[in-house]
Length: 274
Image (spheres, rainbow, N blue to C red):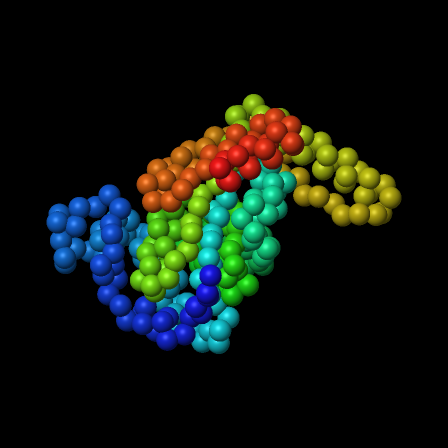
């Protein structure tokens, strides 16, 4: 598939009327009307529209020099705590012949500025997460496809995914968006989270004793069953709300990630290839 990089077409996109000729998800154009607010034309919340526009206006004003491209495919990958996302991401990439390293949202938010905000007890805002994810996603290294790990997690972020797809269509280009969710039940999730904590403790004791290796950070959810259960419940609520927005627009694959390593791999293959 031929790739077209941002150049003149990017300038054109900035000049285009938002939502011109685009389909609306869940909004009757006859009701919304031609002069309705632009977020209504796109069938999203005002917050999502403004968050996306803030990103796009800043992105479009930058000199790109051929460094940006629209990926042929984006796999929006999420998984319940303990579902084995990190273990199986590479396998998902192999199925779709995606060779670039995945975009891991938690890694993108590990910069000193974000860490300072989190240390001060501040939440990372949806618009900050969206800006980080989308600006990396549109780099030319991902032209042949990319797996985005851990985004979207909120309804606003899910709506921003829709707006990004709308923008790609405005550019007269295509990108195959797919949503993949690894699922386990609460008991399995808690057991796996606490199991990670046991392994991390053993590792850290060995590092302290021998001076070799690296200390693994321990989260409260690695040692506290109640905290692990709460983390799971929050994830489930967030992902269900996000899926309600995405599944009417994009293919959504929900994969039961319980069972042996081999069994889970087979489930992934069956869900994504058949």
